[in-house]
Amino acid sequence: MNETLKVDRRDARLALAHIYVAFIALGLGGLAGLLQTLVRSGKFTLPANISYYTILTTHGVLLGLVLTTFFIIGFQFAAISRTAGTFSDRVRFWGWIGFWTMTFGTAMTAFFILTGQASVLYTFYAPLQAHPGFYLGLTLVVVGSWMSGFAMFAHYMKWKKEHPGQVSPLLTFMAVVNMVLWLVCTLGVAATVLIQLLPWSLGLVDRINILVSRTLFWYFGHPLVYFWLLPAYMIWYVVIPKVIGGKIFSDSLARLAFILFLIFSIPVGFHHQLLEPGIEPFWKYVQVVLTFMVVIPSLMTAFSMFATFEMYGRSKGTTGLFGWLRKLPWGDARFFAPFVGMVFFIPAGAGGIINASHQLDQVVHNTVWVTGHFHLTIATTVVLTFFGAAYWLIPHLSGRVMTKAMNRLAIIQTVVWAVGMCFMSGSMHFAGLLGAPRRSAFSTYGNSPQALEWIPYQIAQAVGGTILFIGIILVLVIVTNLAFFAPKGETEFPVGEAAESTERTPLVLENWKLWIGITVVLILIAYTIPFIDMIQNAPPGSKGYKLW
Ligand code: HAS
Ligand code: CU
Image (cartoon, rainbow, N blue to C red; front, top):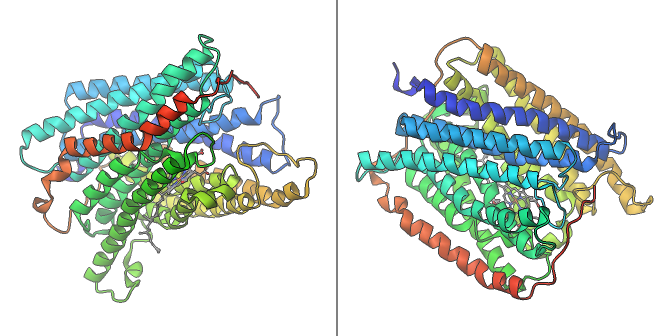
């Protein structure tokens, strides 16, 4: 059998189980999103006294936390099994324990949200206080993901032992970096949940230090967005070159970009707290500088993608600055969906740089501009890339092939998504500049002239949200077809080759002691003094509020 088509059925089942949960979350979370945009248009009220904030929490948790984590872990299991060989029974066993722990945690969290006991939004900021079951459920999701992470590390170490002195396969290396990043950053959210939020919601303590809890949250929350982004970058660096018939521009550059993400994506959480009192401006400044450092690996990625496209175009005889555009496989959804994601990342990244600039953030912070920003980054760039990957990954795992008709539907899906998002995210950005707040249900604020200015944009958001919901139905049709109904056959997991031999990849890129060491030092520099300050000069703390 052709090497690239081979897939171990047991490994495939483990990866598929994660992907099924991810797409169920997409369906439910997407429905919640549709309802929100309708409420905010002012033309619709939720039935049966359901709170806007219950729906908003469902949306954020299911899409931001559940869809992403499950898809990423499923994808990475498949990627590691494909590039570093079939798993041992032990690795697979821990993968399944991780899966069930995460699934149980998700069900528990969903129960407390849907019964209206945890309308605290996906960032669960104190002093909003949820039922303890909400925090426990999320803890189980994180603990389950750690088990899967350790299973991946064990498999990677086995590979290293069997191949002394060799660089590991690029995709496996990238997945390991992402899980190390995840492990280091989830320590922050685990700390605030276990030490602060749980005891406080159980009534064991009365008051909570809000600034400490938000700081621990954003210590986790920013690297979280790169935990979402890096699998998309894995697909851009490794899969897309193969899909278009080209080569990876440089194996070393790709690894270096991932290492830079590991180092710089954690000590930057203050860029979410620029307007929060109680943190010295100097430390905000330090973390903003580090934020600009973490932009560099994204610029390297943009450069690599252009280089891959151009090398491919030149090999087909194109000339000129953009001649390569004519040679790309526009009719292939495995390429088209991620490519549209890349194009959207140009304005999305520019918006991020605006947010990170202290003075500009004063204009956009806590406005719906920020919601617009993350619907471009996660909900377009990352999600369209994941959809594009699902179009080969699911049939690869389910032993089927995508038909021409489904490929055509997937192209339509991508266009629908892009159009819907231009309406929705575009009007969010504009309304945000006019001061429209994020995280709030419809209100005319006593017919204030400023609030009335926002309403046309909110109607445009509802139009966009409706188009996006059609996009969700389309992708669910395609995914169901690929999982259960498409013709039986074998589908490739595309893995590109580097333009130059990987023998030239420096082994220092896999010196984990060095990179994790630098990561820890940077975290200590960026956080130690402000953290001591927050504890020593803490106000009495806050009791809990249930405002919904
Ligand atoms: Fe962000 C808020 C800064 C990237 C997600 N961000 C958020 C929130 C989320 C989020 C969820 O500094 C809201 C959190 C909340 O609930 O409060 N963000 C940044 C910066 C970047 C950035 C500097 N964000 C992301 C990514 C996300 C994400 C990625 C998810 C996946 N963000 C912020 C800040 C805030 C924030 C502040 C807080 C704001 C506030 O006030 O609350 C950077 O990493 C962006 C770098 C990206 C680039 C783009 C490179 C372009 C590429 C594409 C190449 C295209 C090709 C195709 C090859 C520099 C790689 C070309 C083809 C052609 C035909 C042209
Ligand atoms: Cu951030």
